[in-house]
Length: 357
Ligand code: SF4
Image 1 (tube, helix red, strand yellow):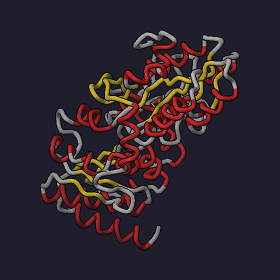
Image 2 (cartoon, helix red, strand yellow; image 1 turned 45 degrees about the vertical axis):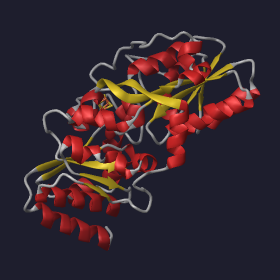
Image 3 (cartoon, protein in one colour; image 1 turned 90 degrees about the vertical axis):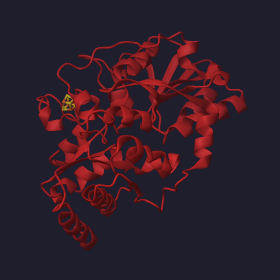
Image 4 (spheres, helix red, strand yellow; image 1 turned 90 degrees about the horizontal axis):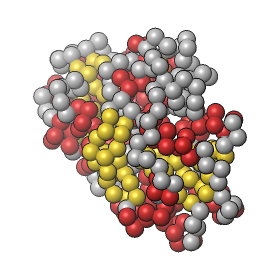
């Protein structure tokens, strides 16, 4: 542990000594991973609990969206591209995009949306579908893909859009009965949206918020800010990641999102359907909509993996070790739910680093 980390942990204990018992939530897969990796929970005083929320993009993608992708694998002319973790998410008892690939479907791992564009250029006889998941951080890349495909006249590329945006989902999750006393706001998302986009945390949810970076010292500094505000009874927002996050955010990225997408209702695993928490292609980009081109129904239903408690974990209502399958029937090598697939998932982080959630 660095001197700075030790000093921050000591200061946190001092500040929390005069504070009521508190639950803080982080909502970023990279925070989930960093908190577990650096054993930060073990540095927290007894009256502070840090829980994970719906911050892992792979984890929050519901089975209905993955079901739409699975439906596309049944079409012989389609090549489906997505991030590797999406391919491994188990669906029902014994299905996944990876299994479909094993059965002969053309399903490919992409490192970025540009891989899908490259495939479309190289194989004009095939229909390339980019299965787009993630938050405000990845949506600009999908937007850039669509604009570039249109500029180049690429017609065999579409997007199965499952992008999500944070504010409405957090309001839906935290806006009812008070279960969380402070929010560690995601630094990556805030770099795009701007810190000001998280003003709803104090103003609508009535709790303090702190935008946090990803080094252990940055996370502890943000927790210290939350504790200070909580102790003082103040609901305010602090930007504790100013080297990267500006109040107004990345205007170019916001412009890309706004040009190509419009807000829509979206389903989240564990949270259900939430108004204005997703992105869909604007009508002028309808030619790039995979749901439209392949006449996919709005919600392709699939069965959740039996026994999996990912939904509760994403709501902060349970921890990985509350699941009876954790570490036995469900491991990173044989995941039963998405929270064990992605390295940013709470179950995978707990399994790998063994922190207590
Ligand atoms: Fe789901 Fe596995 Fe986590 Fe249980 S341990 S909640 S089955 S991912």
